Structures are given as structure tokens and as C-alpha cells.
Length: 528
Image (cartoon, rainbow, N blue to C red; front, top):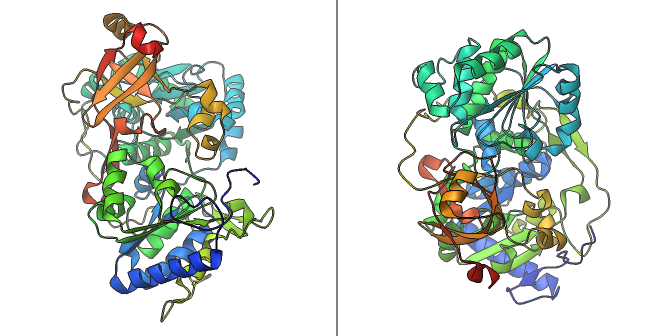
């Protein structure tokens, strides 16, 4: 709340470090917003991690002024993929309480690496069932796989094939999910698992008295995320297990419901429009776009925008490049409510008033669009009271088809995202701290011992990863956690996010790692 870097007043220009004349900055902002609305050139992107009530109120008002195609909600790509896949499923989703009574948990993804607070719940499951209490499908030996009695280590990028093989072994109905019923042998050959491994996991899950299927998509592994979510749902239905999707943003389920209710633009389509120059004025509410997308994509977006207005509580890469920076309250400094994935309202109460003139999202938008002629009211409560999880199982569109067992192409090394990281290093707020950077000043890349031997790389040596958009130097960690030919890196920090390509075709956002070449740098170069 009282961090020394907290933004406490509006700033005009990137070099203005003080609060300045707040009235003048807000007046200028309101004038620019009004002009952009009149010209039809305003694009708005707001965080899905705000209170659901704030997301709805802000989005409802802005869509009346500029249309839903110009407004989008930022959610992590993994959250959007999970929610997009479950949109086509009618099975119920469980709460975290489902883990209390579970005797078998099938975890898809590295749950302990992405949601470490669930560690005790999973350890309790292991105590109740010491034989096969924990099944884990992952493409790297993360924290969860350390404790799994049935570790299903799939080839990099082949988690969907492993899920499909397990679903088939459990006699799940996969009609309408897969393009065609892929042969079991082909699925297993593709993901690198054996018949015995799959059958053992299937028997444990099918015979469990109380099972839970937990699914999460780490950043950088969102490819085929919708398909994985659907397969997880069908697997849970076939084994009478409870389905528990885990999200990076607690507000994502509610934000997704708002997006569907108001017909807001998909994030991929919004980014594509921004890159193409559709928005001459851009308003970002609590979204660090420059800190999330690859530099090449943000460079294209920034080059097409004449006025970038960023509202944030803390400085970020985006605020450093914005023309106007407005101080925003943290979500815990305003009243409101959140909708969880079961459609239940969770009341949020402000811990204190925001300092230094910072405003909540609703108040901020009201201040800068309030002077627009024929303004729309915030629509507080208009349809929000019955906004719940009813969007699930009611989608009219078809899910994006994904073909399994496709060739990954020819290249030297594949990249996957790393979940065993220094947790505080890749968080937006924790980037304001100095000590995580001092503990791991250079992000590490994990490589298999056979690759390290071939490249003559030792632990802590510096290596250069070269890809189509440039190169990055990282500290090597020799580890059996990854498959030969696969490199694991953090997907969310500035040093490494350029190793992942953000594709925005068909309004959908797809994040995929780039193929890379690896060069071992000499000791002399490492010292410099």
C-alpha cells in the first residue's frame, strides 16, 4: 500500500516524476478521450483481475460509447484457454474444498509450481492414499511430479495427447472434442508414454472413491489449452471425479463472464486491431502490456498509437512509455465483488482509502469520460445481478480445432516454459522489489545432461539462445527435469518473453515457443 514507488498523482510525459497539476492532466486526458470517441479511434483494455463489479461497470459504460469491438479484458492466455474450453462443456466445476476429501488427484500441469498454496491439500491426499494418490501429467518434472506416484511425463508440447490417451483409457466420451478418434498407439508414441503408465493411472482414477481432476496451464504452455480443458472435463465426467480448473487471475472467471455478456472483443482480436493501427488513442487500465507481450509486438502497437494513456498503481514498462500516466487504486482499496468459477459472489471490502488522489477504475473512467456529450451511465447492476456461470455449456460457436500428433518441425532445440522458478521473480508487483533480482539476477535455462555434454556446457555457464527475433543470454542449469532437446525457461520476465511468439489470427491469441539455436559462451565472455 505504501511502497516508495507507488504512483500517487497523474503525470504528463515520461520525464515528469512529480504529481504536477492533477487538474490540468485530467482535463487534458478527458479532452483527448472525447476526441478519440468522436473519431471512433479509442481502444480500451482493462485488467481481468479487477473486481468483477468494476470490470462490468467500466466495460458496460464504454461499450455504449465506442462499441464492444474496441473494448477487451486482459486475462492470462492460460486462463482464457481454460475458460474458452470449458465454455463448451456442461459438467460442473468444483471449489478448492473438493481437495479436502479426495483420495486421488489427477493433476494436469504443475499445480505446486503455479499454485504452491495447495501444497498441504495435495500432501493430505498422499497421506490418505499412499499407493496412487497423485497422478501428474506434465511436460517437465516440476514440483508436482516430485510427489506423484503416477508421473506421466509427456514430450514437450504433448500434454494434450497424454490427456487424450488417459481419457480414452477411462472410456471417456471424446466425441466433438477431437477432430477424429486418434488411435491410442499413435497418441502414446507421440507423447512418449507407455500403455502400462496410462493403464495404471486410469485404474487408479476410475476406482477412486473421491477423485478430483485439477487442470492448470502454466504461462507459455497455452497451446491446445482449450482442448486440454475439454479433455479434462470429459475425463472427470467419465470417472465421476470433480473438475477443478486453476487460474492465474482470481478474477478471470468473472471477467470472462462479463466479456461474453457484453460481447467484448477477444484479446487476440484487440491486439491485432491495435497492431494494425485501429486505435489512435489507447487507454490501459491496470494492464502492463509492454511487460507481457514480446518486444516486437509491443513495438508495433506503440508505433501505431498516437496517445497512450496508462492507469496503474505501480510503475511498469508500459507506464515508462506512456504519454499520460494516471494513478489507480489497488483492487483491495475499493469496495465491490468478485464472481468465482461457480458463479458465487465474493464481497470485497476496501482495506483503506487509496492514497494520493488515486482512483478506483469506475471513478477514474467516470472522471475522464464524464464530459462526453450524450454520456452513458455506468450501468451499475444492469444485468450484473444474475451474471453467473450460466455461460458454460451454452456456447453457440465451435471450439477451435486442434490436430494432435502433428510434427513439431525441424530445429535444434524446443523451448518450454519453466514452472520451478523463484516465484517472486516473475510477479508484476514483486518486480518492484530488489532482492529477488539479487538472488537470480539472470534467469536460468534448464537443459538435459545429454544436451549439456554435447554443447560442453556446465552448471551455471552462460549460454546464448538465438531465435528468429534476436537472442538472449541465460545461465544454464543442467537438469533431468526436461526431455533431451528441450530447454525450459520462465515465460513471463523481460529477458525471456521474446522466446515466445504471440499469434493473433482469427481473433484468438496463441502463444507458442520459438525454435532456438544454443551457443555456449566462453569463460572469458561469461566473466565480462
